[in-house]
Image (tube, rainbow, N blue to C red; front, side, top):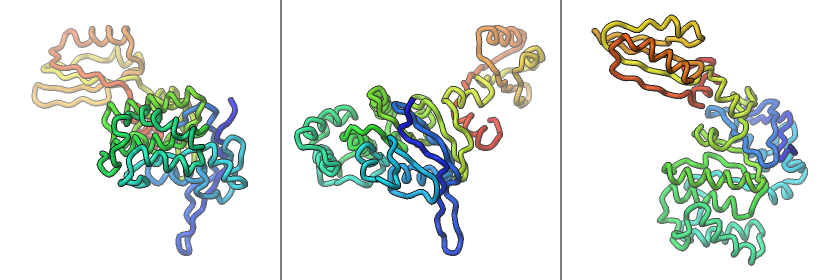
Length: 317
């Protein structure tokens, strides 16, 4: 797979009075052509700084970033021709213009030929679910509608590389799903995407790999499957009951574990962490619980949030 984005030993240092702040330190990773890579990290990890460097808004102090083989330091204009950035939020749009007029304006700034631009506006609005609102002033748009318009503006130039920052912020589940479908459609057309999001469901449903940053350093680069598996278990089962606790010794011998037991009078609650959630484990758990008075069973599959916490802190939740 050819690299669409190459980040090679990038360091970025900011001056803060007499002190120096290292925002990024020897960061290296790639995004392949047609690949979606999730960029993860807590606030202050360096995600925004890195996104600005890739988009040519900042220069690295040391190191190299190439977009489709072009160095962002040596030829930023050529980089911008093949790249779009969607930062989202409420700013950056013209409220007294309609959605269609905003698209026309930003398309003209991108240098799109008039005929091509006019032919793409309707499809861009349709793709993000704003076709019926295309002639309404943006000042009357909800936050979610504004976010969808940001996505449409990013798509209208048909970029080969797209930087997406928190694309589903402020969107309801239906709108978020529509944007994920549009983003997945871009990948099918060969667009490479660097996705920054605190909503790990975006990463789970869209990304091929993840890059984790912590205090400016890359701590992990892995596939989404490896990321999910890193939590170390498949599901947490919470069992509530009355009277005698079940004997889970046989379950523990298979590598599963009881992580918490709480008592309140005759009532008890037990949490079990299961390495696998298979019919065999389910049958074994059913046999263990058969001789007890169970009032409720809750199963929660392991989430990417759990993996993120574990990798960031070394603590499983």
